[in-house]
Image 1 (cartoon, rainbow, N blue to C red):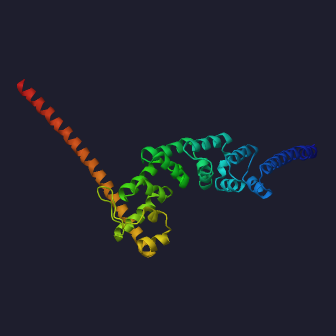
Image 2: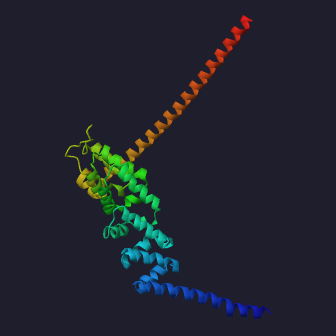
Image 3: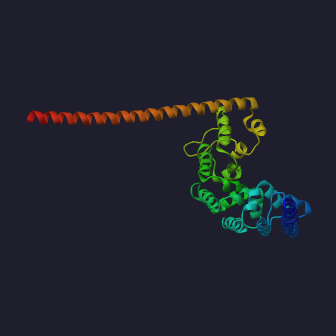
Length: 298
């Protein structure tokens, strides 16, 4: 009986499972081939656990106008896009079009920053709204940002505002200079380190009360976009050893300032507690004096 049961399981259960697996994989492969992917490209997509549901997402990417090579690169960089439904991809593409990305620039932005397709639609709209309202970029300037640095849409709105305010108030950059600098690709810490280094060297003069800087100051683009080697040789005209030492000094200064601020906050809270206790003691004294006067009158 045991032998019979094992034979039935091997003859019926396993073949059905294997056939079901074999029937799905060729169907997905054939659908990828029908979409124009080569055998090699189809195998690479199948290795990402591509399902029949995922092919609808890939079809939507083809409808957008992305070529096979770009789609494969996007999926390899962001495989979670395969789990995104075709309708969600369509909605995000429509959102990008509503923000001003037309044909050509839309494909370029998606190819450059595939993370846009993995971001919630509300986040894309919030980042674009921040550029318009908080940073005061015009609609045309926002379109240019999305064309040149689509990574801005993936950033937190507060982070975008901090970057803009630092470049505008601390570095004296105008809106056009900020756009061409590609500042929204960088972190605030990276920009601050380079800017402070130039200030300590006397190669970057802070803007005056009218937010005007001397013409001798380097462009924001030179501070932001250049590699560290080119930045040190062409702009700072300093060595990497000096730059590394400065970074350590700056980190120590920031750490000490943070500790001082924490101490000030603790002292402030202590003073507030002390003042509250004094007020309570004064009120207790007043109550005691009133009670004494009442006893004396009695």
